[in-house]
Every structure is written in structure tokens, then in C-alpha cells.
Amino acid sequence: MPRRRRRSSVERSGYGRLMWPWGHLAVGYLLYSISIHALLRRPPSDRAAIALVVATQFPDLVDKPLAWMLALIPGRSLGHSFFFVGPLVLIGMLIAGRYDRPEAGAAWAIGIFSHLFTDVFSPLAILQMDVSLGFLFWPLIPVPMSTHGGFFETILFYLNASISLLFTPIGVLFALSQIIPFTIMLTVWVYDGCPGLGLLTARVSSTRSG
Image (cartoon, rainbow, N blue to C red; front, top):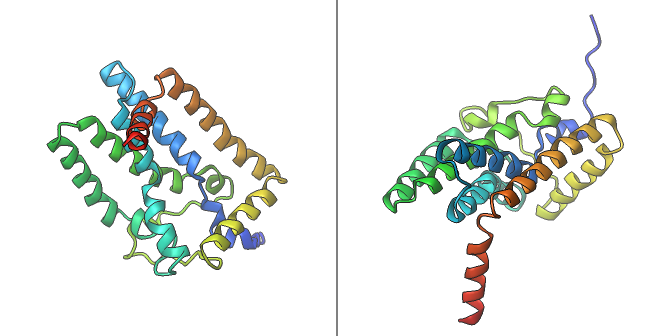
């Protein structure tokens, strides 16, 4: 029988399923922009773009502080579970519809579900044959803890792992798989007229003037 390859400490840590924030943002925005152009023949609105940005990061904004600061749950559990995000997406779409913002509701749904999709099928997970679906069904399926000290210690762990990985063939492919989509996303965003930027700038200006 062929010998099973011994997994490194980086792989055992769950790094093989890592997707950085800009990767989530790139995939989510491209999916949403393509959908809006195909259905409505126009770019995303300002509010929808902002909802999309928040949604693409939302699962990690829920889980990472609870895991890395308080060690209450694994790094991919509550905010990544269908049992939590499913009702949350539905509530968000209902609220958006109530205020006549269906486009923002769609952005909210696409952003969150694209985050889950890219976590499951991240380029590094595929390259390292480390694809996992278990966290989507937490707490029915247990998920190992992924904390490496405190919040900043865990961030430094993954940053160091990223730097180390860059000097390997898989690391180069992984970096390109995130840099290229992000570059494409920025190009599409500019082509769309930088949706969301004007609204944020106006809010900041009004806050300062007030």
C-alpha cells in the first residue's frame, strides 16, 4: 500500500482551508456584479455594494473574535453554519424587501453564500486535497478549534504560515489564485463606477461637518 503523506503542522492547523478577506471580497463582488449586469443591465447600486462587502466578511466577523479572542467556538462554526446563516440571510432579505431594497438583500445573500463556497473550495484546500464541508453543519458535526494563542497571535501565525508557503510551488499558485481575482475585481469595480465609494464619502463628510 502507498504510504500516506504526513501532513505538516500548517496543514493540521487548518491553514489548508484558509481564504483571505480579499479573496472572499473578489469572488463575492464578481458574482454579484455579473448577476446585476445580466439581469438589470446596469452596475450594482451604492447600498447593494456596501451590503455585499459586509456580507462577504460577515461569517469571519462573527466567528474569528469568538474563537481567537474568547476561545468559545472554533474559527469556522457559528457564522459559517447553515443553521445560523440560513435564517440570517432570509431575515436580511425580508428586511431589505420591507424597505424596498431588494438589490441589497440579494447582495447580502450572495455575499454570505459566496464566503461559504470559497471557504469550502478555496484554491489552497483544493491544491492540498483538504476540502471539508463539516463546518457548514456545525454544531451537528464537530469542528476542531483553530486558535493559536490570542487574537493577534493567531493572526501572526497565519501571516507567518502565508510567508513560509509563498516559497513553495503550492504557495505561489495560492497567491496568484487570490491576487488575480482581486485585481480583476478592482478593474470591474472601477468599470462599474466604484459603487459604494460615493455614499461612504458623503457619510464621512457629513459626519465631519456635523
